[in-house]
Length: 466
Image 1 (cartoon, rainbow, N blue to C red):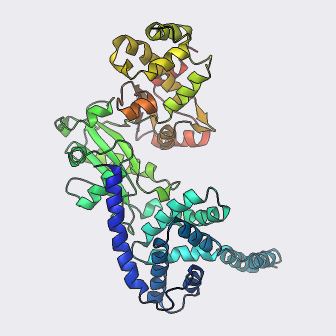
Image 2: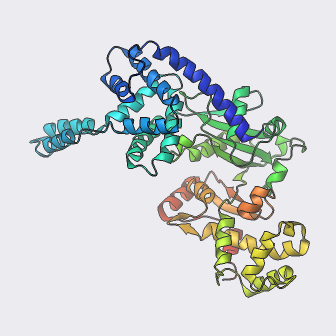
Image 3: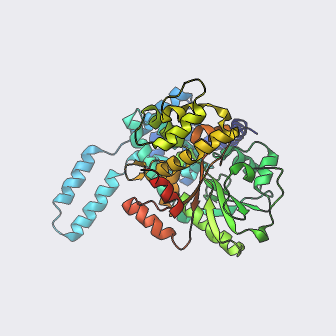
């Protein structure tokens, strides 16, 4: 069950269903079938007729967009972006505000200025919410705008307007948290498999294993997109901190007796809608799920993740390439040279480590593993706690969990021995601990001061030889 096959099948079926409904609505509009895109947009803005006519015109416009090729869609969006606010009207409204003689006049002038600043294109976007699957249409539209807007300031402005609208419409207060299990509709399970972004779901058996009695899966939904998960989290109920994802994903392992569980491991969190990028509700999802699990299982004492370190290998490879003098101690360099030097290919500790990481077989060699493990664990701790992108953690997953109020609890060598784990993080994974009593405190100190909380063991690792 590949992501491509699932996603493509879902998209094809969804498009057929949507376009059929829109075609029927558009048939009620009448007028010239060859009407230009700009004329259709003007008709929507002029709002002739009642609500039914308005919905039909919006459906016709959406149908027109879906019927265009890539170049046509770009021009469609540029035409829509051109419906900007009237600069002369804005200037006049601002002048009226500046010359307002009293508080009452200022309040009226401010209200007029706000209305004038709202571009007609924002009203066009809003009209799509009135048609079937219109909200999903807008989310997907923003996916396209995010790509096109990088090189087109006009489309970047349209994307910003749409982002503002979506941020309001997808406020966490409007979202519904639902548990997904094996009895959920097949279409929803299929979507779950297609959207999994951390650990690929390879078969129906794999999916069933992740929804077994010792597992939980929760997702946020929007009322206007009831069959489309926005973000979901997969949880394993275990005893003690889990250090390796392969054991959690083992389809042959029997279900664990949840009465013996003392730990909930969040091992996969996937955002499903690219068009909602930058609109965060993942932190609310984790907090809500922690609360639900604590109520359902009184024996749970620990809530933690088993998370990837997707940027670690990229950072490490760059440091090794530049021969950073502060990267390795002399003792570490000697140990690495001893296991890497077979034909004189490595002359420094950095070169030795780089050479070892290029050898896929180092995982199976006990001597190599003994030399490499303490070095990678120390460097992994430094990467998480000291390396920065401004005031935020360099690693995107670390930033996500630290900003949500977690602390770095433990690093795990051989945490992910898949090809993906080897290439992204040299097999390292990390446990982030969510302490319900400390979540708000940790969130505030990271958000305000950039402080990264970690266990004593991880802090000692990060200090290392230096």
